[in-house]
Amino acid sequence: MSGNMIITNTIDYQKLFVELPGLYIILSTDLTIMDVSEKLTKASGIHRLDMIGKNLFVVFPENPEDIIADGQSNLKYSLYYVLKHKTAHTMAVQRYDVKNLEGIFEERYWCPVNKPVLDENGDVLYIIHRVEEVTDFVQLSEVSEKTVQQNTKLESQIERMKIEIIKRTKELEKLNAQLDEKVSLRTQHLEEANKTIGKNVVALTHQKKQLEDFCNIISHNLRAPLVNISMLVEMVAENSTNEENIIFLEKLDKAAKNLNETFNELVESIQITQDTEIPHEEIELESFTNGIIDSLHGEINKTQAIIELDFSKAPTLCFPVNYMRSILQNLISNSLKYSSPERRPIIKISSQPKKDSIILSISDNGLGLDLEKHSENLFKIRKVFHNHPGAKGFGLFITKSQVTALGGKIWVESQPDVGSTFHVELINQ
Image (cartoon, rainbow, N blue to C red):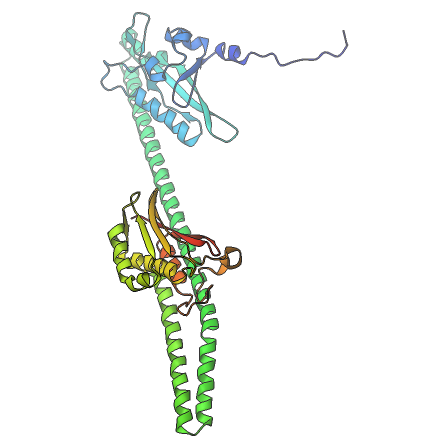
């Protein structure tokens, strides 16, 4: 043999636990007994295998004849305290009667301690329940009363101490419960405050972004009309003939109207993002959409468009009526406006549920979009992607503003000269 001895860890920890010189129980998180020490089986008079796999309070029920017994409820509170706070909990002296070999409950007193065993993530795996029996100590006053009758003063002191101990124990348990309640309440208030702060930060960030966008839009979109008006005014001043002035004034009037229209669009876009408290109504989608189709009758007849509706999967939606009318009208109008001259327009409108939302889909076989080229600008103001006399680049911007203002989403699938499908997810309130 080699002179170097290799020592291996051959400790049987389960055997070691069973033979511990104390009263121990290992509990799972649902209070099922996983194992017990041999000394506890002897103290309880219950075989070890008759306890393992059973609930703690099934093996050790409360004495039904003790109408004021509170040992079980106190023990439950301590165990749930350990599960919740993941820390040890030492209990005051408890009366918890246990059956003897004849099945009769005997008055017993205990000092319990409950300690969690945590995993690597800090979660509770087991609870180690250790008790020390103090029945002889607690009952000492009763024995003294029977054996030392002449020492009435000492008996009175012992009785007062016993009452005081029990009173202080109850007070301590009450204070612990009140403290736990206050801590939970304070924690709840802090969590609610943090959520409110988080929402306010998001809202302020969104409003800051809106203000920046608004300033950029004004800077970009109003510069050209204002320069045009200034130049026309200078030209009117330089030309003296009435005929020339009339021509310049007509152009000046057109530029002013264009400026006014741009301002109205900007104001409307900002109002939409702020107006999130408008009332919601129950909308029957098929009849509501048919009403919008009727309002577009002229354009539908002109293009000979076929419109198919399928709201069978989600027939109703609770949503602001004006917003719904604007969203559907903009998307259906776009499908008609940008239809392909090479084929008869077919527009399909459907709905489907998604948890607390409804997804509306509007698909067509029109001109389609090159998303690789235009995806970043698709929903921006004053962006157009086809040569059409009625295109202003405002409809999709307004539609997205209305959808996102109430927590919804909008996205598109499209191919050039194949068609487009706009999907709108709306919160069903």
